[in-house]
Image (cartoon, rainbow, N blue to C red):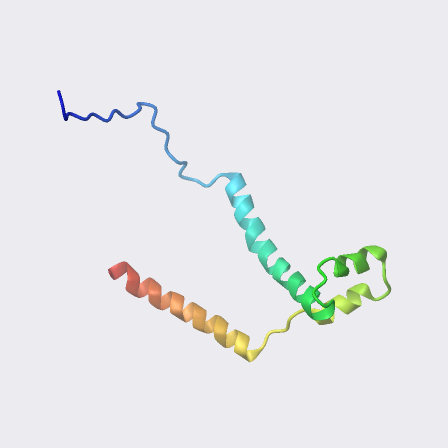
Length: 103
């Protein structure tokens, strides 16, 4: 039978689990919690330590007096422009959720 192509599938079909595994949930939580902490740490490194990534940890581990008191004011503060950008992003996401499924 020339030209007859048969694709045979395996009888051992494995399906993805319906419920996310514990490792997947733990990974998602790690990213959701770790990303903002990483951004804040990078912000502190750039603003208060001239871009030296290890400097804040060195100060904390060395027990430099007032090291933690120096880090807290260096954290980024919310601004009206930041809130506006955040709100605009959520409005855009809401509009896309309403419009795109119809396309």
